[in-house]
Figure 1 (spheres, rainbow, N blue to C red):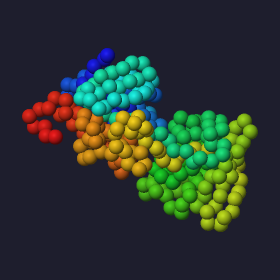
Figure 2: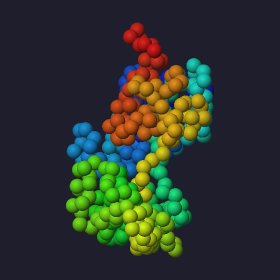
Figure 3: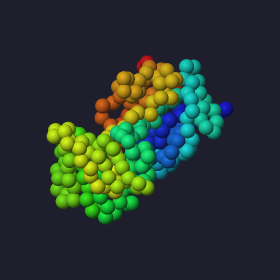
Figure 4: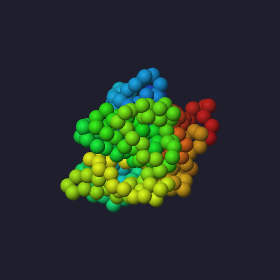
Length: 311
């Protein structure tokens, strides 16, 4: 059985930041990521609110974080999925699809996954006109008609990015005001090829081999109309990847987010959480990095127990 000082579950911004600080503190550190390291940061078309970078693509920022993390000596294993956790004993056991690992402490930084709108056609046309990632699939819709669903930061960032590629972009939001930052709202309204559909809900996504139309319901007028589109980008938030943690006895709130204190501690000694999987109210790259740093330093204190550490 492999033994580690610290195992970090998740290779997004929180996990990578935790890895950097853990390794620099002298901990033998492993990051497990079931996909490619970088997390949802890599999906952002553009990041303009992370200190130190006036403007940078999410992919480039994620790649810089991964490179820096590896440079500190952290081992990052991509495409290795955690199957179960045994956190009851002082030595924590992490079982993956490849092996069984033993560790002194665990940081859960498993992030979240894209929330679905749950309408007919959404699942059927995934990859055939329905997407959850603008930077991944936006280039496929050059000079096409696109609908973005949502009203938060991710929806507006995606709409602006795709507006530079598509011939026309419509944004369907179920309310009469966006929940996004004012700077994003202002920039969106300045785009000539973006139209906002207020109080509008997608009821069905239709097509043959590919998406060609959607059914839109107006909550104010009660009218239902069909809209001709070639692609639908769903940007309505995320759901935490906390099921394994919950099954292992880690407390989560009513929405499934891992509950933490100000020091990133969970209800189990030696188990910490950071990033979008936690019940922290702000889901941003900057907050994820800060949480990851705190979690790593707390894990170090738990493992090494220097004279100044207090439970």
